[in-house]
Structure formats: structure tokens, C-alpha cells
Length: 154
Image 1 (cartoon, one colour):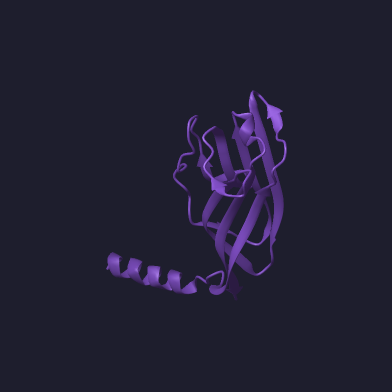
Image 2 (cartoon, rainbow, N blue to C red):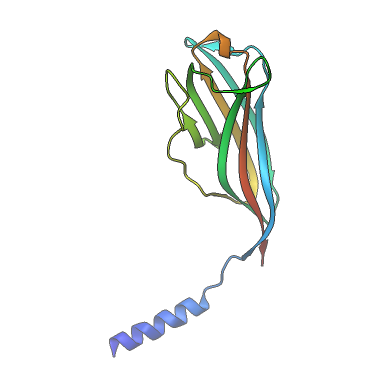
């Protein structure tokens, strides 16, 4: 008898709940983080580059961040893997979504937290790059955060 009563209460409770809204595909999004070939700031025995942009997700939209990637262009305009990177981080509101660290070569990075869901509002996207060699001070650094935008249907 108790089991039936609990089952009926469970059914009544779950039928009374309402979802926040359904998601409808809107578009694939990409946020570019870019640091031009220019002198970096000398900081604690490293060449430091930081690029931040403010991104606003409109009301009624949700983003699902699915990946992030990074590349470097050398002086001839070709993509390159610099071998003197100390720290490499892409973050959204100080949540690291991509990081690589190795004193001799760029690593594949840490385990990522994908997917990362972002509701409507303002977010700070940041690319941070540190090199131990001055020759990488002038490399062009390109990063991209990829995701899917959904409409929230009430």
C-alpha cells in the first residue's frame, strides 16, 4: 500500500513540474580570440600576451560550447607549433576550457569540460599565452571557441 501511495505521489509531483523551455537549434557560433604579431609584455621571466573580449548572449538564447582550438602563425605566415610555450589558456569567465603547458613543446592540453552551457548574459572570453623565448614574442596567436546557439522556446 505504501509503495502504491509513493508511486502515485511521485507521478503527481512529476506531472506538476514544468520545464524552463524547449531548445531549438539556431546556428553554429564561433568566437575568435586573436593576438597580432606584436611585442608581448615581459612578466616574471616570460613573454605574456592576453586578449579578452566581452561576448553577450541575447535573452532567449543559450550557447553550448563544444570545443576550442589554437594556432600560431610564424613570420612567413604559416601555421607553426612553437616549442617554447610555457602557458596557454583559453577561458570563459575564468573557467578554463583549453590549456596546454610544456616547457619544450605545446601539449594537447588538459581534459576539457565540454559541453559548457552558457545562458543569456555577458561573458569574458580570454586567451592567455606565455612564452619563454623572445622569438615567440612576435608570433601571431589565433584561437577559436566553437559552439551551438539554441533558441529557448517557452
